[in-house]
Length: 266
Image (tube, rainbow, N blue to C red; front, side, top):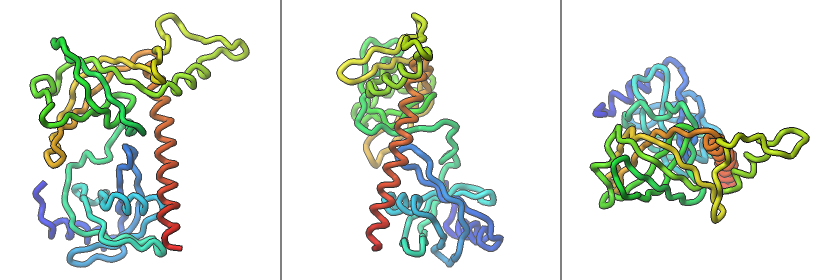
């Protein structure tokens, strides 16, 4: 979005003058981490805000944040200039307006802890394509293609496909416990809702899907492809369990990073 820095600073100055809140937003391993605060100080190029422990850890390790506000006509990407851990103060500059879909996620997305490669077969194609999974939600996933491997003709929005995902088999053990009838120790499963069989420590999920968006990332020499997936029966429960498990792990990881960062100021 081509909006001048002076216009962005003017919008932020109005927020500061009205003492309205601005939201700091970071996406950490797929999870939105946010903190509502006020602008304590603003000049011709910088703003200063108060933050908290977990948000400051994101700012330290990512070096940027997105600014949102009810009175802001757009979302502003900002660069971290300095942090004061003792006072829990952050200073931002180099403001840039970005698309307003940042953080507007209706479903929780998580990034895998270990590299996961999915198998994709597009309708009408006889061959399978392998791609690394970047994130997954209950309704979709995103994968990466290196520029020289990008299947342009196949990866068009609206194209149908089948995606096979291998997840850690520990997820299925939790599902089996949830599916047992109380007091019987037997699984309450119909023949059509069997948990997908695991192999080599993995549980295999297959779902129909459709390409919804393609995002070129030229600086990284790759394309990110977003896919809508239609999980059925217990496959959806397995995905939800995996997302819940990863969400807990990501939050714990952020707490550890926060503790490590704050130990530096002692």
